[in-house]
Image (cartoon, rainbow, N blue to C red; front, top):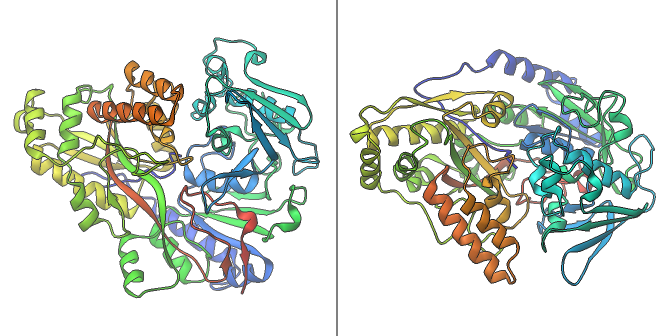
Amino acid sequence: MRHLNFPARMTRFRPLHWTRLAVAAALLLAAGCSRTATVETGNAEGILHLAINDEPQSLDPHLIVALSDFQVVAALFEGLTALDETTSRPVPAAAESWTTSADGLTWTFKLRDGLMWSDGEPITARTFRDSWTRALAPTIASEYAYALFPIKNAARFNAGELPDFVAVGVKAPDDLTLQIELEHPTSFLPSILTLPIAYPVPLHRIRRTGGIIDRANPWARPGTLIGNGPFQLVRWVPDQLLRTERNPHFRDAADVGLNGVVFYPMSNLNSQEAAFRAGQLHLTSDLPPTKITTYRDENSPVLRLDPFLQTMFIRFNTTRPPLTDPRVRRALTLAIDRDTLAARVLTGGQQPASSLTPPNTGGYTAAAHVEFDPAAARALLAEAGFPNGEGFPALEVISRPQATYQQVLEAVQQMWRRELGITVNIALKEQRVWLDDENSLNYDLSNAGWIGDYVDPFTFLSLFLSDSGNNATGWKNAAYDALLEQAARAPTEAARLAAYQEAEALLLAEAPITPLYYNTQAYLIRPEVKGWAPALLGVHRYQGVTLEP
C-alpha cells in the first residue's frame, strides 16, 4: 500500500489549509452534539469514531492506493480471503475454503452459500470473475493491477494484448466455485486475494452511473455505492466525515460487534490528538512526534506503539536530469545519516533502513544495504559533474504535511546541504495532488513509503517492476524484471530468496529510491475499544471490534 507517504518543509512551503482544518475540527465537535458527546454517545450506540490521515481519493476498490482509502474500504468490502490482524496470514472470507493442485498452478476457491450485496442482490463466483475483468481492464488503468499478474494471461489482458477475458485464467464453473490458473506457482496467492484489487464490485449498480470500465465512473458514492463488507456507507461529507452503519446482508452480520463506524479525515496530527483528548475520537490514526514522547514518558495506557511492516523512502524521478544519472542518486543516498534520523529525529521506535525490504520479511533479510558515506557521496557527485555541488540545480521534494515527516525531511535537507553543497526545497501537497504528481512523474523527488500488502519480500520488490502501476519513478530495468521472474519460477524457496537478493542489490545500486527508516504505528486508543489487535500490515477488519463502556 502506498498508504503513508509523508512530507517536509523548510526552505519552501506550500500553504497549509489551516482554515479548512479548523472548520473540519469544528464540524467534528459538532458531529457529537457537544464537545464531549461523540465518544460517550458512540459507546452507548455502538458507533466507533476514528481518525484517518487524509480525505479518501476514492472508495472504488480497484482504484485505491492510499492507506486512508484502504481503511474505509475495508469496512465496506471483502474479498475471497482476508488478512488476520494478529498473524498477518490469510483466512477465509467470502470463500469458505480453497485447494491447490499438486503443481501449484490451479487454485479452486469454494464460496460461501448465500452471499449478498448490501442491497440484497446475490454474489456468485461469476461476480468475482466479472469484477476481475474490470480490475484488469486497460481503461481502468488500476495502479494495483500488477498484483493479479500471477494469474495466467492477466498481464497480457491488462496491456491490451488480449481482447477477450476468456483467455485469462479465471473460470466460474458454477455459482460457488472459482478456479484460478496461474502463470507459475505462487504460494502466497491467498494473501494477494486479500487486496482491494481482488474485491468484487457491484457491476449492476456501476452500470447505472456510466461505463463499467470507465475509470471516471462516479459510482463509489452514497446512494450508489454498495458493498459486501460488514458495514455500508450512508453519508460522506468531503473533508469532514464518512459515516457507515451495519450491513444487514453481510455474511456474518450477527457476529459484527459494532453498529457503525465514523471516519474523520484529519491530516493535522495535533488536531487528531486534541480531538481524542476532548472525547471526540476512540482512535487516532497517528500521533505527532512530540506527543509520542509525552505519552510514553507518562506511561499512558492510551498510547500504542505497534509493529508495522513499512519502509519510508524517497522516490527519485529518474526521467528528470540530473536524477537521470545513477551516480547522482547514489550520492544523495550515501549522504543521508539514517542512524541520526532514528536516534535524534524520530520518537516512535523507528529503525534506520538500510534496504527497501524490512528485515525478516517472510524469512528474507537483504544482504545488500546502503550506508552513510559522505566522502563517497561527494566523489560520486563530482564524477557526475558537480564538484562540491557546483552547478547542481535546485531540486524539490514533494510530500504531504505531517509533523514527523516534516522533521525528517528537514533533517535530510540539511544533510544534503552540509555534505554535498546542494539545495533541495520542500513542497507540501494534499494527498490527491501529491498522488497525481507522483503518477504523472510531475516531481523531482517524493517523500514516500510502502506498507507490505502481505508478509513476503515480493510485495516490496514488485513495486519497481517496469509494469508496476505503483512504481512512480520512471525507472525500468529489464535485468531487475528478469530476476523477479526468475524468483517467481524458482524450483525451491532458497532459489526464490536468492533471486530476491540479487534483485534488491540491483535496486539499491541503481537507486531509483533511497530508504530512510522502518516505521512503527503510533496512535491513541480509548480503553473501551476491544478487539483492536496490532496489525502489522496497517489495515483492520472492523467486524471483530466492540465497545465496552
